[in-house]
Image 1 (tube, rainbow, N blue to C red):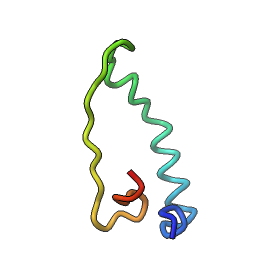
Image 2: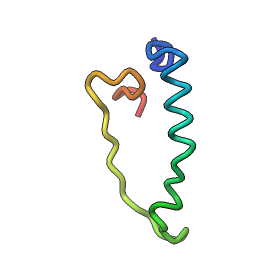
Image 3: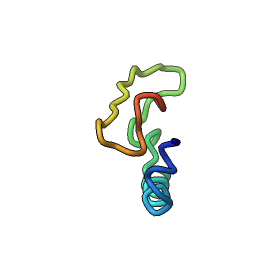
Image 4: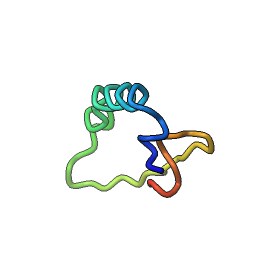
Length: 54
């Protein structure tokens, strides 16, 4: 079952609104020609972010 289906429309809508409001590229201020390593963290009971979805 897809993560968004299990989470429900209200949680998906709220998560999308918060994610779109946070402009990560402005916060980090990394020059476009540089690469930055990242860690992907998945919560064990998080209905939106599963290990399969990362």
